[in-house]
Image (cartoon, rainbow, N blue to C red; front, side):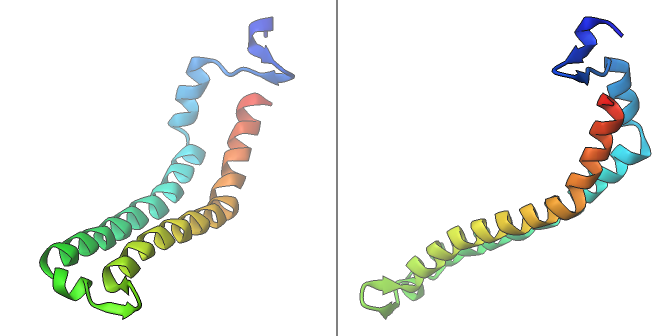
Length: 113
């Protein structure tokens, strides 16, 4: 191991070690766990957004229906888009802390020593 391979007390893996790790079962499991969350959540949010756009386009009179004061259904739907974003972010952080971080830490430890 030369000086270039040690960075701030950690070993710098070689390019071949990165390729080997990418092909490893541990990395495959990490990638699978991430995708099992990210793809369905992305599709769900995208569909929710498309529904919002379609309803705003084709049912604009309904979206303009007042709920209270100057607040109408369209504003509530728009606000819910932001709420959904924050909820998904929170759920992802909880999921990542429980399911991804331990796997990432194990891979990092194996790679850097």
